[in-house]
Image (cartoon, rainbow over all chains, first blue to last red; front, side):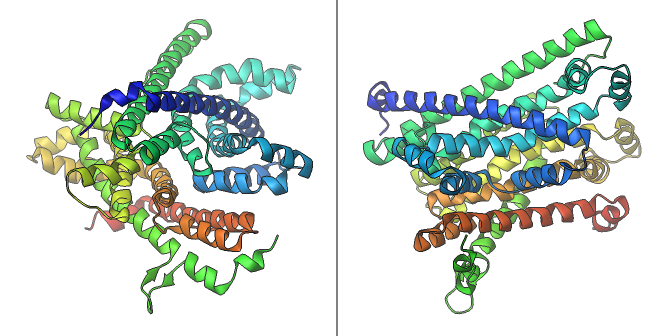
Length: 239
Length: 234
């Protein structure tokens, strides 16, 4: 009934292409989401009265609506958001990938922003006030004094977010990005080898996610130990 | 922006409650909520059982639960939805679209809730367990009447977050053609052809309001007196 050898042929190649697209999509999304999260999280932590409502609006909206609807929304709103000439140029080459990256980065950026903010909150605010009083600039005190301590708290949830990003890239198939899940659908419809392809895709997703989780775990343990040695901080142990 | 074309009475009816009385067609939001809340209920039950068993004295049971949690947390929900669509059919069991999405969503959410439950149980002071055992309560009684009620209270914020994610995840149902809120929105968008952005803004607004409402409800429970009144009298 099942013919696993097909995975060595054309379907296998399609799945491999899908995996590459998934990884590429995840990497861009993670990068962009991290940048958004870093900026928005820090700005929220500063509690500027001007940006506070804006940040609140962004974070609450991004976190309380389904990512797949956000992907569709950004995909279809490209006509409004982009200048017409750019949009027409993009339409010819296809902007599904870009739309998926932007939408997922906006979605996950909100979660990472909250992680960054709680990481910064874990450092006593007096340290920030002290460094500012000593004449260290805003960016420098954030970079040299607060962030190194906040990273310890923020790294494990950011790793979880990275795993979550890999899983959510599967939603990009809704707008036709040819990532893993899309390739499974393609094999199912055109080559009638759905079960084999689905099994292979499932294993690949699980392997990638477990790998990221494992590496992240190792990294945060190492990081915590390193900081504890050099800065006289308690080692954080998680299971 | 032409919201007036999207926000017609007929469209609202399709998006929200549907035409239950005359044709028995369920609206998008109603189906989403039905799917979401059934899944939340079932997943909480299953997740609690698995979470408790993850610290059980039998090694095999413990390992089984760990494998379950790791397997279901590291695969996209969409893939699970496809499996749930396939697998029962291969066993000769024909599930409806609703049932297969419900199955996938429940199994997926239960894996996360199991981790929350385990964390909640560990937050309970072990002295309470010893005291209850010393008073002659059995292990099951201790779990049900001493550990879980306290754990549940500590778990509320994490559970609220997970419940919101579950409501959001129901939107995947449209990818296998179930007429949930997202699918109805897509259909309305396809019929209007020129107003997709307005349709999706409407969808985002509805989901936002539902999820904010749910988190407000969960926050009501975080008041210890109210929580005790509701749960400890049952």
